[in-house]
Length: 561
Image 1 (cartoon, rainbow, N blue to C red):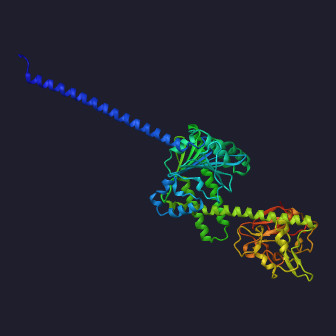
Image 2 (image 1 turned 90 degrees about the vertical axis):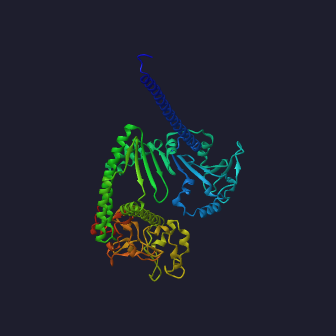
Image 3 (image 1 turned 120 degrees about the horizontal axis):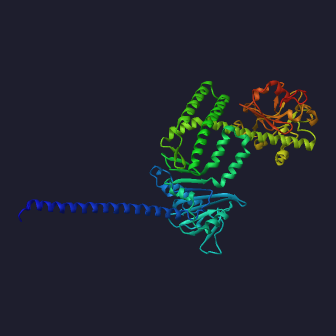
């Protein structure tokens, strides 16, 4: 055709076709990408739905309003490579022997607990197995004979012989154990997906636990109000904030040599998290100061540490305080405070913590032992007072024969008043403590004469009476009216250090005409029983004149309160 360049026209048409194909390719690529995205979204939704269904199925017997829930993926733990040297075979054989069922068949364990009822502790356990089990095979020594529910003949029931709990089975792969009230709720209630179940179901850790604070909040707040005077003021207000703003406490843990432990504190809402973080930061700061002072005091008062060890321990405490003051102990994630305690470096970490906490633990243990000893002295003094009420006199420090020879101790005389009348009757009262007959009873010392920290010979006690001229213990008949200084001002019984322990039946005590009372003090502090039945703690720093006044019963001295 004239005027038309055929070559240009052909190229132009080809360009149009290429552009059209390009547009079609672009559209096709976009559609493919959209299909891919939609497919992924459907997969995510499907996986989430499947996971939600799996969570709902697993926790279908757990009441949604449980106070706490603990889950253990036992099969996952058992298959861990780093636990392959655990003697699973022995545990399986032992379980079969004691329970009647192989515990290695357990797949998962879920524990639920609620607030105690009038019937006692409320709890339930759901045990799922990978192979069918039958509770009829449970050991008859531990469980009652099997019965069936009159309403459902498929329900097998057995009771624990020594505990208020039952074992119930409806399905071959599921066994439930618990208190009767909780089991009834687990069997008759419908699955209720609660926040606590949802949270614990999301966790990927084989051991996890969650506790709801809301049911406990009135109890916690009431306890803080009642104990307000005993809690240092720098802690009380922040503890009240924590009790008010906290919603739940969750712990998650892996198992093995490189275990991880995660602690989560959930706030009630987004606004609560800020107040919670501020309160926890203040608690950390004040707590470290308080702990440092307590540990330092314990180190300073430790009579077994050399000065060099004390100096080193004090330096270490100071260094650890500096570390814990600056360390990032938690992170805020949404409305949760997450404390990630990774133990991949477990050996040095545990060593550091033990080194820091050991003095505090020792202090706590010593405080517990001191309280236990105070209780012993309280019982001893109550026995003395009951003896006085019955016989119109306190027990003589030592009984004597016709020739004035000492026989047995006052500790034997008060046996009927410490619920040991049978043992008292076995003694030959007219024979000395170490006669052929009486010496055999030395090893049967009542627990009330055993000091919790004592490490000396069996049958020895550190509970002695201090006596000298001017005390009732030197009188043949120690009468109440002889204590003119006042029963609340006069020491009757004293706990000594282990070095001065005596056989409990021997009439041997602290003779202050020969010995210095301060030589008998226990490390740190000694408990004493007063003639009115009260117990006091006396430190070695006490004024000697005051202590002397507390020992004499008719000295006329003024004893400060």
